Length: 430
Image (cartoon, rainbow, N blue to C red):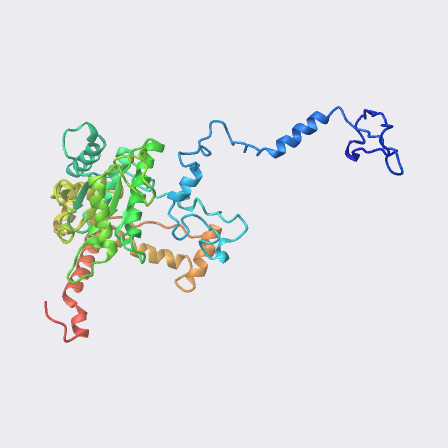
């Protein structure tokens, strides 16, 4: 007689079921008794086996999470996010297969730099603007009106230009006055320069403008602050001077700005369009010296509101007076300085004050050990806090006038010398 049983159930309680022998049927060499082994947890084993046959449901991160929600095509949010991402260069992180494995690394993972673009703060806070400055009333009214008008454009029954173009002579304080207004209004702007309007890769500057525009929109949405996109010296990047070459990026930047003016709430950076992707309308302020060198359809009325900034004599005196206020220079002395050097830009009077520091700085260098080997010695003394105390010069009307004459002499030498004509005899006379 043979016993047949499952060895996996040795530890379980056994129940024996006997089957009577059949006398009518003979088996060779042995009689067979079948023994069936069962256990009290047999039912749970059967349920477990049936569960293994069925596919397990993936555990969700949260019942309220939308990251794993499927769309009509069965794609989740992460899949859609990846499809909308711009996979150029390292914008998606140090991903193996996108960039060389040498630069991907393994220390922080393949996608360790996935948020590199978002860690960079591109907005400006103006914490360095300390002190009391003068803002010209005409300039203040124009900038404030443009910003507020764009933010309430939805309730106005009028066409509101998106761009304010502030142009005028060099060094007249266009950028500085605008930044003072931003600080006074509590605005956190996104600042760009003309140097970012060109790239070795076609389309990159236009994409950058759209990204900065959307960043300013996120400041409004996430931080609850007003924001502005500001581009300094735009004519230096988009202007046409003589026979300068027009590049594809120049055309794309102009087209991007024109499109922003026409569709300020629908801004794409290369991703698929979504109905709910509405961008806040962000006013744009650009500065320059000569807008006549730019593409005419961009600066037309309706897209760009032009504002020519030429400070009056009163504005210059008030601005310079605030500049020299801590030095004890009276307003009458400031008026004397401005009348002595007429037709000068505002930055000229700041350069005058800076020139008066030259002798004091040279004396400070001598006190710290002289000019010989000052590079190594200066850094060591600064690290240890052993630098000598710098005593600023006492500002007087005579010292400022002397600095002013020195600056105007350098200006005249540049205009009169023109050594390029001496070096190139065959250069055409202008």
